[in-house]
Length: 91
Figure: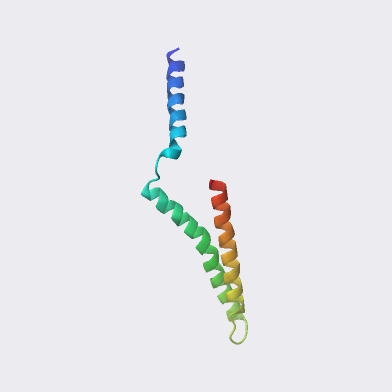
């Protein structure tokens, strides 16, 4: 019987913690990690597009930035979509 009382006590405590969680302010480290994650989700596709586009442009004869610009714009679109999906799932 003592085990059951102990389990109920811990369960009540956990439920109270979950209910009060929304009122507790975020920590600075949590805010930094969250912002860093958002930044990486946005920046990595842009940088990858720039590098891939630059490499494709070096394969073409003459001066060309067509692939670089196109893949940077695609990276911005993909990065924005990544951030949108991340924020939508978190709220």
